[in-house]
Amino acid sequence: MHLAELNISRWKIDKTSQLAGGFTDNVERINALAERSEGFVWRLLDEQRNEFGANAVCPDPETEMTLSVWESAETLEHFVWNTVHKKVYNGKNDWFGALDSHQLVMWWVEEGHEPNLEEAKSRLDHIDFHGDTDFAFSWSYLSHVKLWQNQRCG
Image 1: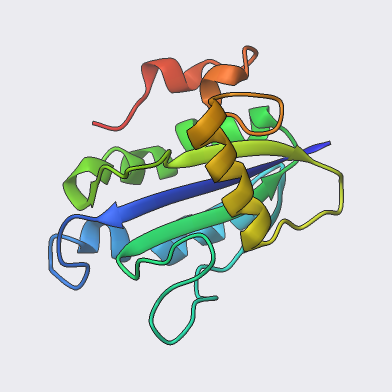
Image 2: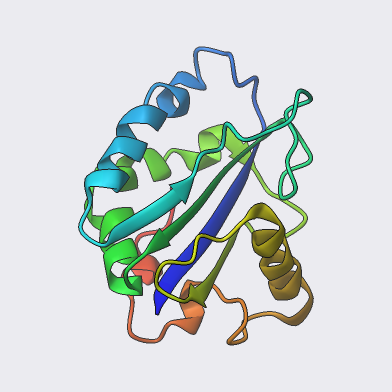
């Protein structure tokens, strides 16, 4: 099995502002790093939005999202917390505000499966309603990965 993950953030500042550059100036670099990272399998490009900036998971054009698949929780954990991704992630509170739903959901998928936005939305809705289960979960559900406990965004 592989691990799928959906991460959503909503801008709390103008995404075209100079302050947003700490995120926007690094998106391509971090995505390229992910794609070269050990254990990376696939990602859905966030550019797949309609003319109003919405998609099935993020109807609000003021959101950013990542939907990706990794070989394991360990390889995703390594990318998130042991690469330059961590430095950008630590600035998250400068750019993004709280959501009414979970911002992260993960689930297991068969090797070769590329989740679509509707599937990701159903997992997000599930974790919002039921909390962590085998169907949809967050880092805390994965007892064998621990880096998230000590390295949260600043």
